[in-house]
Length: 116
Image (cartoon, helix red, strand yellow):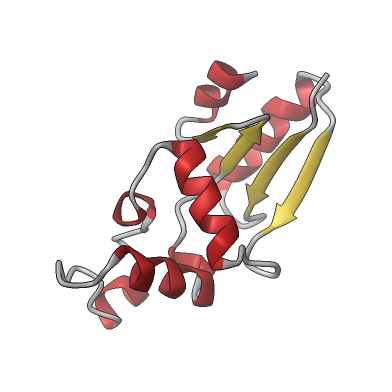
């Protein structure tokens, strides 16, 4: 059985529900508290490829910080968005679950069953 990695926020109910679902399925889980240990830009690039998403799609646009940093500006490059997310991991949508080379966002938590 492959190890599963979850980018987890203990304060997020969807993240906790997703982790509980993975634990109930008895998977070997590597839990990354991404607020304490944010991904590097290179790691986030790989995650985005695994998610098949662009950086803007992974941003939490309802966060106050999103508005404060004016991240709705279409002139910001993917590189700038990635660097901003790594510097401010609160802006990264969660939870992200990775198995092998596939990734999915656990919203709703049951979505992760698609890659298990």
